[in-house]
Length: 637
Image (cartoon, rainbow, N blue to C red; front, side, top):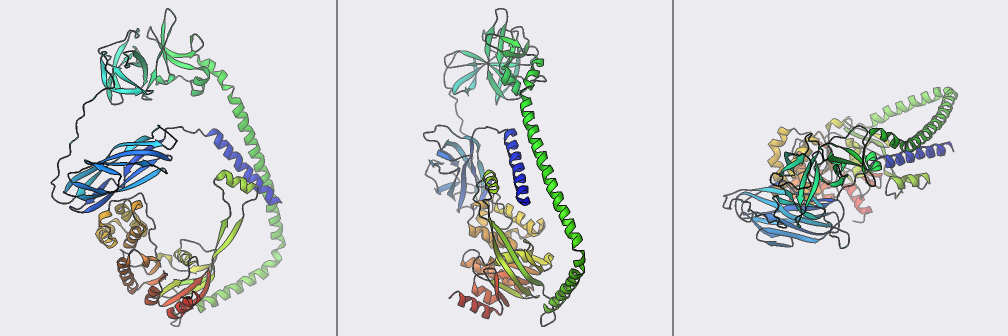
């Protein structure tokens, strides 16, 4: 009962913390974005050879229809396939997406040496909403360089000049190109040549930037507010304020009292807010920033038919609504504190009970001590029993190893569902024994194979021996400084290229950069990935990843204890022969080997002893022919 109460209190505190986090963590709202990128920043190819380039369309949410144009160097490359259409050096990718990511593999044939290129020319990706005309904001349109070996007979790359044609004509002096605000095209009026009649204050001209465009702003003598005039297709001018910090234009309105004209705009047009002015105050009191016709500027409250100068003292009233939030936080803090006090109370009672039990068990300690001594003596006898016929101790001793996993039946889709199911006691666990009291020894120079059907715990055993996992029961006696676990693809970053992963994976294994530099070409040649060195690994097939992992792992000298996890089933038949030959070299180099393989031929040809594990239980240890024959008989092979 006490345990149930404690669990409920803990979960209640967790739920309250989650509610506080949701209520007081602001959520940013932003436009959905997308990108079109290549698989690598650069590529290398040989003259008169085939190669591929990966193109990736990615969006923050599910995409709808899309149209992407990819331009390539047609004087050095010939497009051979992979997209919907191609015309005059421009490849078109178009269709309707079914997810937030689409991949194309474009195939090319080189026709000249030299420095070629491929780039995303245009990209239009729409959201997946029905009849949507809303596009994703494209944050990246990629370009990649391609270095082709051989004589350069291609044409130099030139950017075609384009003559700007505006959306409309106007007689008012203006700057080009046009800009778009609220789906309307405008030109920026050239302030050096034209000043609209609406600018009635004593202005000064201040040069500046609007994006990449050089402009001239109207300002006051204090230069604490800046304006630009925009002209529309009807020839009408509109005054806008500009914020240097926000890099944004804000619409400007006029208020005429008869004696004074106020040019009022968004408070964000000011780059310097007075103390006490916050976003909450701006929203609640409807604050604007204004310039008067006499050149003075300030913050004003916009009321029904007038502007009133904003007073910082009025902000005190806006602090009152915060009292409710503070009270809410205080209530949560009090409840949490009470829950902690209850927890401490129950914890103290449990400690007291434990102390009483300890006091009552003093008389039993002598008996327990004698039992421990007897167990230690038994362990000494067991250690002596591990010696082989030559009197050698095992280099690997697996002693009564058990590996137990707790598997939840929960189908919770998130933290909220998990907490609800936990509070309702709907989550149960079942125990899975991957290994159940397994014992065997491996002596120096032996090649020991582990066989068994899928899911019998073979790979789990290798990971326990290598130290990657700790057993639930029993122990493994081995000097793990001498162990090298060879399992394919460990330590790969799929977003990096093959070249980068060779250095990353090699560093994880323990190779120095100098060693990798010396063996780099050997690794690439052995993995047969000469044409994919600078391609991202995520674009590789599983066989290519396995070949690369095998080539890296076996590039160095063999360790004293070598653990092989299904490494001899890599690639096609030709590569398997190469990998088997390399592993045999390592075995014959004097390493003690513990290996897992489903190939009985491999086990019989290379192993001096076989361990058969079936569904986590040890079935047999002994001569390879005898154990493999018994295994095949049970499997009716």
